[in-house]
Length: 292
Figure (cartoon, rainbow, N blue to C red):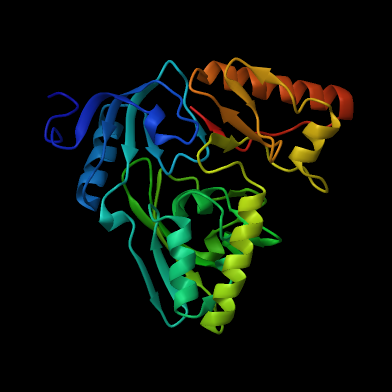
């Protein structure tokens, strides 16, 4: 039995991953699947377990650099509506892991439930935001998370309650293969006031990011007390460039790629920035981007 047997309708070979990432870089996946429902997702994960095949989840691609050599094993991409539903009831907002973070925020604000509007303008999916504990202006998604349902690497569905979850700066204990959905406990607030807050935060957050038509990703975590962008500027390396990869004029913690860029260009630029900031300022920068 071949790996694809029974999944021929959702699995394809040699899918180029560059188009699924904001940097528009990267080689092909050995196998690539877009399951249409939970049963297909669980079946794929269990098949990988049986055949000892590596499996990864591809989210919104805003925080991902894929090697030009491609990726061995199976890459799962959740595009079906079942994985992106958002519902609001009595202050408890449920969102699928594949839903856009912006959709979750807008749905909560529309129905008068506040807390997450500080994250307006932060890119990515709900699952990615939970995995990396997305934060902005002292607010993080973890503080409003009541529970999360996940799929483990062995294909089990498990619900993690609040007491089981740990959230820290740019990280969480939600490191299973898939975050299926999560429930958020929010605060009742006037929808009109929330809308104003959301719009203001969106403008502020977007002003600190590269332009929407640029191929870009945020690279480093902010060390305590100072931003990574400020450290790059103070180290005098904001003009650094390797091949088609350079640094954004709007925010030095974002790398921007041109059409001729390669994944290797970005990796070289990341290492150069880390070395120079360490040498000149004595600070070890930690990458925030996932590198496959």
